[in-house]
Structure formats: C-alpha cells, structure tokens
Image (cartoon, rainbow, N blue to C red; front, side, top):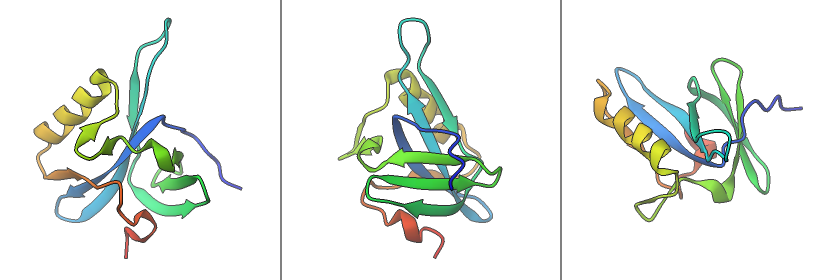
Length: 114
C-alpha cells in the first residue's frame, strides 16, 4: 500500500543537471476563497509506479506524490498552473545555480532512472 502524501492538481517533472543528474516533482494547487494557490517540490525521485490513471513518485524523504496522468502542467509549451505557481516555477529555474529543464509530457516517466 502506498503512503500518499501529496496529490497535486497540476505537476511537472524537473530534470536537475548538477554534478549528478536527478529528477524532482513540482506540484501546484489552485486555492479557493479562503486560501491562496500553493506549490511543493519533492525531495528527489527514487521510485516510480503507475496504474491506469496515476503516476506515484516516491521521494528521498519517503513522500509519495500521486499525480494524475491528465494533470501534467506543461502541454504544447503552454503552462496549466495558476499564474502564481507558474511564476514560482519560472523563478526557480531562472535563479538555479545549475541548469533545470521541464520534461515533456510524453516522457517515459517509469524509466527515468534507466
């Protein structure tokens, strides 16, 4: 049984090109009347499973992000995050000391580490 800790509405996988290449999930949620939009990024992908509808990304910290396959946040070079979450992601990439790229939605996520 999976210990799901996060269920982002929209998500992308980031490829971090530092001394070693690794991958992280960046997820975003739209807020409501009483709460603002929010985002989270996992600690680095160490395991991936899938079923018919979802990918399950396990992080170094033990977190598990349940990401709907139709919820990818970048399709055809168009963002599907809220403007706030999109700006956070753009700033994160721009200010990073190492290159970061957003993987395409048609990436074979199950075989990222191969």
